[in-house]
Amino acid sequence: MERGWAGFSTPETHGKWSLRASATGELVFDNVKVPKSHVFTTVKGLKGPLSCLNSARYGIAWGAIGAAMDCYMSALNYSKERIQFGRPIGGFQLTQKKLAEMITEITKAQLLTWRLGVLKNEHRATPAQISMAKRNNVFMALTIAREARQIHGGMGITGEYPIMRHMMNLESVITYEGTHDIHLLITGMDVTGIAAFE
Image (cartoon, rainbow, N blue to C red):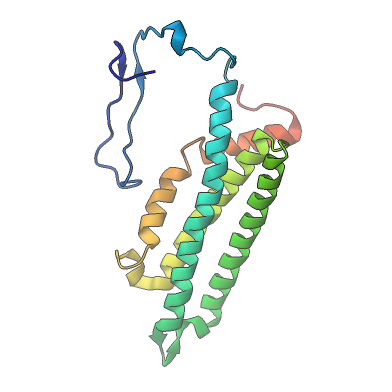
């Protein structure tokens, strides 16, 4: 598809609170005529678009880890600097519990996605495995962003720290390239062999 073709338009979405640094919009097709020179000859059906989705979902699985790590590191550093009752808040049990759980979940997501990368390099990664990693990692990152916001207290909502930026972006990421629930159904179909969404 090329811009300028009759029936093809790309209106942009404005007023976003998430993914604000990127252009977002729709692709609108209204009786578009595609010349044969622009048709893929080696791809049949949905295989082409779905393989692109798999690559995007795999990338999101890694990107979510990056967002989670940034939130974790910010919370860890803040917990060592913020003094309350005469000591850093990182010295309190509840703060240490949050930090320990955050790094544990990040490490589990790293291992999941690293293993998926090994399978992908061997051409053995399945779309269901990729869906599982995307779903797991984005949910993990969103949970960590929320916990990091708690550690930062009132400062967590300011632009001085990266937490709210990641949190707002992850609220979009949890629904794009397949929603959280759709990836759950893909995993459910993979383990049962029964499609719940046909």
